[in-house]
Image (cartoon, rainbow, N blue to C red; front, top):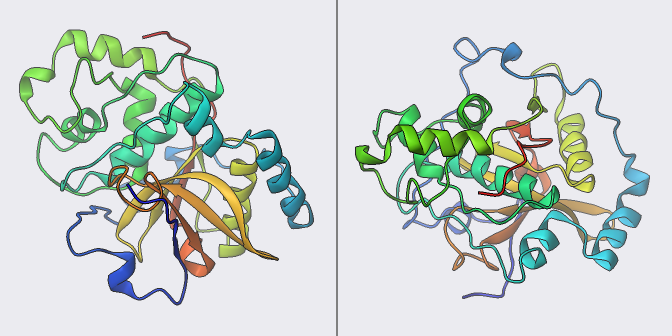
Length: 269
């Protein structure tokens, strides 16, 4: 397992950002098929001024209170990264990681959730790409089942049964999702909205068209004085970068879609 954090910025060669031996699966959002009213606008999101970012990042680090710290320490051991295992299901994994983080924030017991269940149901068990809004909408309406009911990386139709979806309902979103990347917003505002969510410990599923990939946003980081990036939780397993976490910086850190989850149904299983 690597302890070297991978930082992907505007100067990173494309072949380094995208290893040849991994599958991604992001398909750009079609606004005709998936219109703006799918999710709530971020109209009630009060932006944290950039002048406060450095101090808030330092505070999160000192208090070990960021989403990254929650992943590392909440349950006494590091929560394992989900691995899409060569399937084009990154868009379901980003949402599932975000849902698991939301449960951590609420102090709920650790339940490993199955991103494969979400992707298989949406795509009728086909290995096809998508975008994070598809999985977010599904999770809002149906929930995400525990891996005890639908094992991760398993595509058997036998998993699709009443007991599985009864369990999934325990992991629905309680509040609506917020679309942070409506076309009416510019790139600067989009990044600031994502930064505000992460500084407020609101996990986000993030789509990056340049990367063809969807990941979970963990925290805002200051890569160098005055230059900020997003630490992500990837779906390529714990062997990638530092326990599955890397950093996006510059234009590479501006998502094309970002869905923030505020809370989930409280449950213990």
